[in-house]
Image (cartoon, rainbow, N blue to C red; front, side):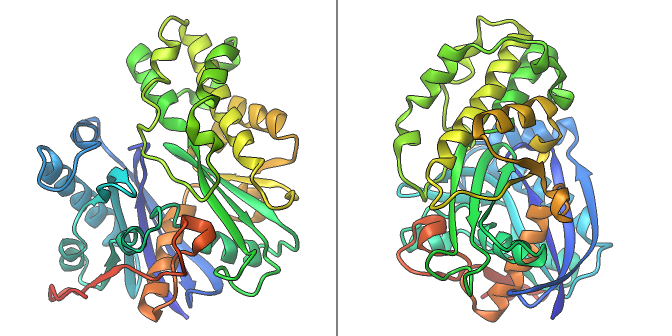
Length: 363
C-alpha cells in the first residue's frame, strides 16, 4: 500500500480537485485529505479560449501554464509518495486526432518534488480505444470498498455525463462481465454555458431556475435523435459534441431553457441505461450534477430506479475523480491495466501513463 495524490480538472472548468488515497492500485485501504482550488474567471477565459485546440495551436500554451500553476499551488501542501495528474482536456477525437490534455507532468514533478504520473489516455487511444472514461477501474474498487454485493452504476455528471456499470462479484475490473462504461451525453456543460450567456451565472444553483420552467420535449426528442445515442458502448464524447443543443433552446425563456437542458441530461442518461447488461440496485451520482435537485428528480423519474448521491455509499462525490487518478497512478507504477474492452473499446486490457520524476527524466 502507498499514499497517492491525485488531481482532476474537469470539462466544467470550475477548478481543480486534489485528493489522497492509500491503495495498492487494486484495493482501497482508506481515503485521505483533499482540497479544491477554483479557477478565477480570468483563468476560465484562458481555458475556454483553448477548448477544441491541439498542441501548438493558439492559446494552448497559455492554457497549459494556467493548469500547471493551479495544480502546483493546490497539490504542494498535500502528502503523497506519487501524484496522478490528469491535466485539462481541451480536445478529444478518438479515431481521429486523438486526445489532448493540457499541462506537463514533467513541469509538475519539478514543482512538487515528487514523481508525477500523467498522460493516462494516449496509450489507450493509440491501441484503438476511446481513451475515456478512465475512472471505471476505480469505480470497481469503490464498489468493493463500499460493500456492494450486486451490480450498481456510478453516474458522473461533470461537463459531460458518463456511466460505469459495475459487477463487484467479478474477480478484477478487467475480467469479462465486470464493467461497462461510456459517456452518456451532455451534462453540466450546456446548462452552465446557457446560464453564463443569459445571466452571467456559473450554474443553475440547486436547479432552482429549471424547477420553475417547462420542458420543451421536442428539443429533448431532437437531441435523442442524434446517432450517438443509438451507438453501442463503449463510446465517448468531446465537451462540445452536440453543437446544436444550445441553439435549440435559444427561443425559450431562461427558466424553460434551463428546464429543457436539464431534462435533456436526464433523458440521455436514461437512454444510456438501456445498455446495461443487467439491472442495477441503484445509481450513485457523483460530480457537480448531484447538487442539482431538479436534475436528480428528473433522473429518478426517467430511470425508474433508486438514484442517490455517492455519499450514500460513504464516498466523496466532490473528490471521486481526483481520487481515481491517485488510484490509477499506482496502477501505472505496478504495470496494471487502466482500461479494458468494455470500458473504452480497446481490443485488450491496456496500461499506460507516463512517469516524470523531479529530475525531469520521463518514462
